[in-house]
Image (cartoon, rainbow, N blue to C red; front, top):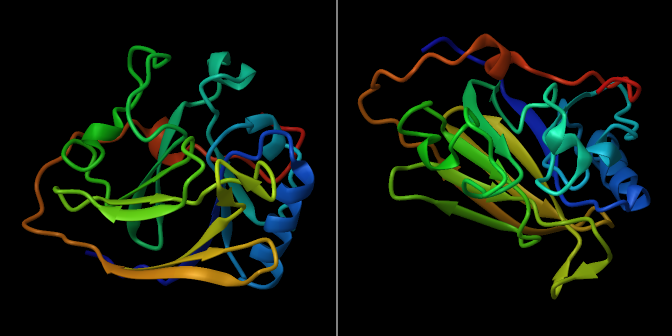
Length: 211
């Protein structure tokens, strides 16, 4: 496997119109945590399009109840390489009743698409877990309010140093409140279905007028 330099990404989800909290998190990501890219996992995609990323690349997917979900130019899920690690980006943690034919199936992120990690939102609860097939699953929490569903507002910082991931959860004061260090399990490399180029490479410019 070719060497990929380490990369730090910031991950947020479920801003639900609180663009003030979203921007506060984005500013911390870029100024304090020195991220190279920002991921927004939906609810709302329209919030993400108004984010000032300070020149960092933005990747975003829509939530299932928002207008962008029904825009056929906006992929519902993405697969992206960050620092040599393959991530699937999704709003929902599983397939959803609103999925369309051809949408990527999160349940096959590892077995079919060869993903090492899976990022999702929707639940508003931060978590890190390793599934039975070795897929690392991460939810950054929410930025809907200072507290929602009993959970404080949080976002995730992921330091990718293939094959290791350092996942940190930060509050809106920039304080790390939880962290996890995991090593990606890569048994014998198996053949996976090649990714369509549009899925593998789809990205959103930092220009908020696009999308």
